[in-house]
Amino acid sequence: WSFVFRSKDKVWIWIAMNRETREIVAYACGDRS
Image (cartoon, rainbow, N blue to C red; front, top):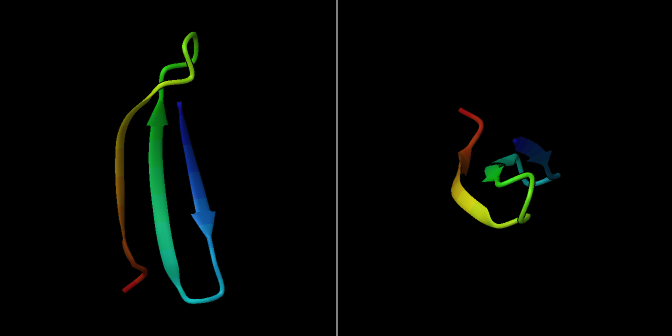
């Protein structure tokens, strides 16, 4: 399960969550270049 959030400062965040426990199992972030 993953979400992509885009903010005004052009940074993206990718989050992988366990659907059953809602625990964050992985994430990555960086600029959009």
